[in-house]
Image 1 (cartoon, helix red, strand yellow):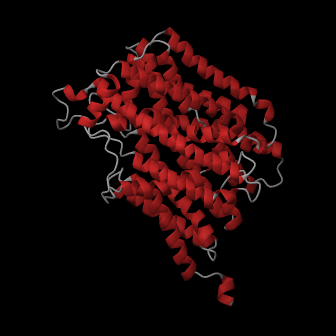
Image 2 (cartoon, helix red, strand yellow; image 1 turned 60 degrees about the horizontal axis):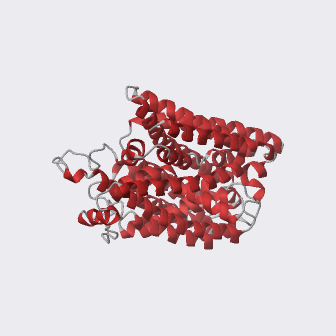
Image 3 (cartoon, rainbow, N blue to C red; image 1 turned 60 degrees about the vertical axis):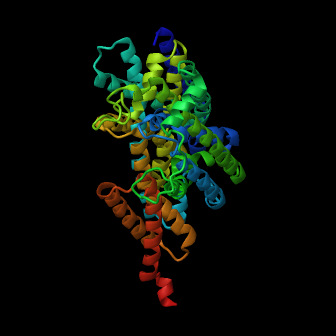
Length: 498
């Protein structure tokens, strides 16, 4: 990488920081700060959903899936489930979001079950989102560290990663603190354009440097089974199968896009349910195209590096992503070491664009409305906006700490982030299903169902080899089933009197 690349990268970071500050004058009420005064157009919401859903983990980790020994396109089975889940959300959940003036999705639980269920669901969301986004911040810091190391190879690698985490975290805190949710959405619109452009640029450079170009890469991919798409095996320990994709992916999307404040908050920035549904469904088509594109980039990287030509390829003890220790390192290495000046900076800026899809405002909205407001009755809206700003800073610092703490993890960032999300989102989705389908259920039944689900999911995570793609389905159905049994065994007082 050259000086021009650094100018592009840091110019982008300075630009989005300035962009957030320019929005500061519009954030006068919680409606402004959390839901953009409900005036954001559906197409911007759709682009924001895509940018939020894909992020750095997609940009960096998904190519590594196809690159790895035995890797292929079977990840797309999960994406097909994402599409089914979107349809379910549009039919069941989105109409509920617009029955009142919600600022968080968990306020629905308060209306149905009471404060304790709301606070439990909100608390789980805050924990999950901080862990998942701390991992995402770490992954992006690896890229910035790689940029620095290309100029100073003797620098201490761990120290550079820590410094990169802090720099990126501070940028994220500043533009979210000043700009609120509306700034986050419009920054994500810009981010989407940048990182799609960066991915296309990287693919073009790869094709130009592969023997035989497109046809040569396809031939290599076919030779090593990279384009295998479906696996109909019913094996709960395999991550990417047709059944795990369609069923697990559907429930995962119902949880992440239907009951997770991080994404639901974007729907609440529109004025009507039809706009939210249009944004969600149209984003699904773009997401499918993106995943296909990033998996194909993984095939191009496989053809470019040609690890299969090495004598040690496939030997016992050799990493599946040889010559790299992890799949997350493959694409960043190509970007920083093999792309021409200017384009390399553009693609690194694209990765940063994908990373800085901030969840800080969503966490602040949840903490203020669901965890703080019940104990601060009568406080002014201006006071709540001030609290939200300080929470944005605190949560940003927490995510920086999480990123540093996970530096020693050997797991793929994609699997780690999705495992955490699936573990906690399942019980939360389950309690929404209880509220929707079990009319006799009350607060105690919902709490029992969630508690049983959380205990079971911890056991599954720590004591079994069940793939994370099943977590959301198991967790939500456990909550639903246990709450149903509890509503029979522990009837309501009104039912006993009748």
